[in-house]
Amino acid sequence: MALDANERPSRPLAKFESMLKTDDVYFFDAEDFEDIIHYYLNNGKVSLAKKAIKIGLQQHPDSIELKLLSVEVLVFENKLEVAEQLLDELQVLDGSNEEIYIQRANIYSKKDNHEAAVILLKRALEIADHHMDIYSLLGMEYLFMDNFELAKENFMKCVSIDEQDYSSLYNVIYCFEFMQDYEGAIYYLNDFLERNPYCEVAWHQLGKQYFSKKMFPEALTAFDFAIIADDSFIGAYFEKAKVLEKMGNYNEAIENYETTISLEDPTSHAYLRIGRCHEKLGNDDLAKYYYYHTVHEDPLLDKGWLAITDFYFRKENFEKALYYINKAINIDGENPLYWKKCGKIHVALRNYDEADFAYKQAVDLGNYELDTWLNWADVVLLNKDVDSAVQILLQGLEFYPEEAEIPYKMAGVYLLMANTGKASESLVNALTLNAEKLHLFLEAFPQYAGTEWTKNIISDMKRAPR
Image (cartoon, rainbow, N blue to C red; front, side, top):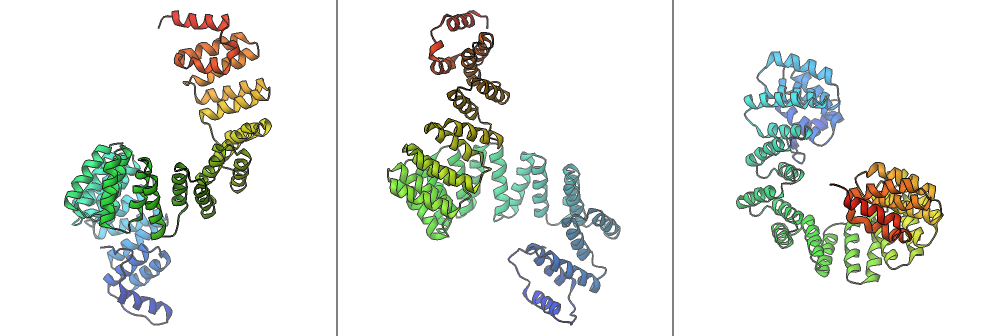
């Protein structure tokens, strides 16, 4: 049975490590070697595990368990062919050893043949005395196959065997969440808590499910119970604060965020949330104070730079907003969100050339959001570059062929170019996609709103058979 990472086989391990430092040779039972090797593997000390395997096999050359541990290391190091050869030899010696099937399954999993891995793990289940580790491996294989229902069932079996197996409990809830079955997750967790009323992990997860369903009072209660079960549970305080923030209880939210800071080293995320709460309360100086702390604590957290930039943008202090977004870009010039925000600020400052460049950078870096294309087109129109506006909108249309916003804008741009044929085609397309958004065209291009040309197209569309 594998040791936990924190479990130390003290006497044999101390004796083994003493042996490594001297020229002495000590004899160990095969079981002692197994414990030592498991300890090293669980703590990521692979080279020491390999030394222990080598010495162990010198002292116990017929030990199948030590050879299987050697296979485990070979699989870890992707030496799959050597591992398979050794497994073939071991299968001849002991064909009823479930670990042989488990390691073969690991090899197939490494080769992305998860169906074959599942077959072998099911065979291991038939001959094994202890099933929990195999159920966990099956759950992971089904996750690789995106079969979340079967993955969930196997992780549930792990929890039913050991209700303190929180890793499997998390995986069960992950499967529920991926399938968006929040009701199922809530039922499962409530049932689990009937048997384990002081399990802070389950209360925490239950609170997150309620939060997903916007059942904020229920979420608050769940997080309170998680804190009662463990008053040092930072995650529960943080999630409780998020609920209070959603409910508009900003002062209480701040208290809970501050508790997370008092329990552990401050995090940029806590500073950011406290800053937002203070901004909601109108405490501008405190909001700035915490935003500054956010970017100081983690200069790579884009949410921090965007928060302080947005703070000054909302205050219409565009120069200060530009100062902070430029600082962010100097730290991470590959972040498209920074460039998009930079474009927005330059528009407010009427720096249209700079705004054009910023939006181009945002798109080049992979920001293809609908409003990016629309805002970029608006910028080049302000620069009287109508041809570029058409090209930008055509690119955007490739990403959003079913959205009406781009064709409505294209209709107006083509009219500016006196290309009534293309304009008519675009307006008909936009009306077909969503006639209720016609106001977008009329508001953006009021000079064409009352023309006979526009009225005729709208009238024809209304008369057209559906």
